[in-house]
Length: 156
Ligand SMILES: [Zn+2]
Image (cartoon, rainbow, N blue to C red):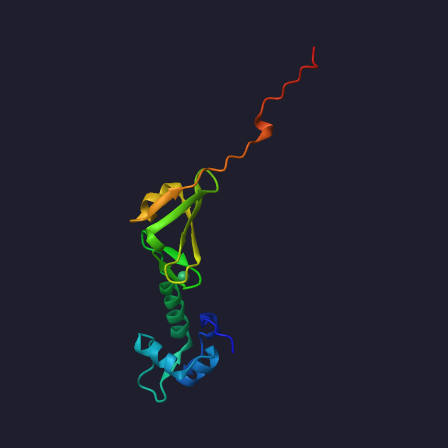
């Protein structure tokens, strides 16, 4: 079975679910659902078995999803392989401009040795930088030929 992130949209807001229902719905283990309850997923405590309102479930999972997407702190770049913000190895990153206002910040993940990237605008670099040692790559200047004046010497 493919491991998937629970999609809060699966929960129907007008239904209530038992722990088993939720586990089946998201293809997850009952203990995972119990962990959600422990972590703050509200239940209708007066009833046995414990019932979870679809509305609460959807809201809880949505909030959790947003929370998991924690933004990188200054000096960190998100590693897609580790699924976590990382401080690039040696605190070194290269900045490669894409346009005059933004570019790619690029480093090496200290845990998986993969390249980690982050889009960064020049204006925000001081904010993002943290204690990173940023090397600025040479701007790749494109010579736009159409900007050169057209000299038409044939006109008399
Ligand atoms: Zn990594």
